[in-house]
Image (tube, rainbow, N blue to C red):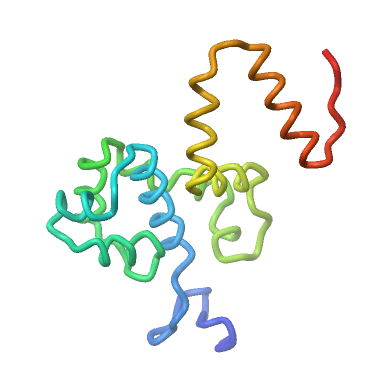
Length: 152
């Protein structure tokens, strides 16, 4: 039984472990992503659920586990099916969640879109209607990132 990583036999988290469960962290991150996509504050989400914004923070960080009924309530308030909170998790399989496998290749994009900068950039970019301007912005960002820009 490994005590170093807080996991007991079969990879099950031991009682008293201070580490957040990776599934709870993932579900919390999906709550945060959806809340931010809707432009909703933690305080407003908390009001809809009868919770404080601090409780929402703990859910979003995976510190506190979200129970089934609360997850259902979150899905109703945020306008998504319950499955939304588990998307991307299944793509990596249970081993990836436990940290024994590779993360899905697109997980960095999901993490970026979950950030304030990623969300703002995505919303602003989506409002640009001229395809040439959009292409120029992509080329500019690639140049800043050190990638070679290919002419079309």
